Length: 244
View (cartoon, rainbow, N blue to C red):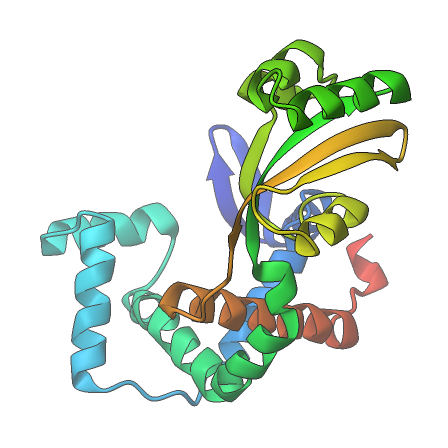
């Protein structure tokens, strides 16, 4: 047995290392990192891409001299070769995502667009159906503002914002609320409706249609990658009994 990590007076040898990784739930992340490393192994980078990757990495960790590089390597227990792989890892991974799922982004966006659309809405919640009905009529008649009544009568955390919620994606509210919001128009007041244990008064303020811009494209790309990574982990990773 040989010591691989020393923490103060504690020495961790190679035999104890893997049980500790399991105990602190690090093994799943380690396995996923290995899966990624194997997937991007054959991804090539141009000289310009390598140069940009190094500049970004050194800037991120505020490394400007050879001495700082050596100190960083010592601190992280890495070799120069491992550092080179780490520096290029992010750009290789992004290229892998694009090559593998780039042509699926648009169809995935169209498929899930309804859930990606965002809404701003006002909400009042009450356990009392009679109170909810009275508040609805007062708002409808213009007697009192939605904001004022929400602050005074709503029994949820939305009271703090005068009932205003959002912008949030349509997959965030209760499914019944999301259904009502998607079927109404901005400014429309929805009569008291039972949702779970609550009676709610609802008004859609804004409907913000999702756009397939660069940020959304990257998000969908990341989601497709994570789904693949989780599936690979479930299918291909097993832990041997020797660890326990």
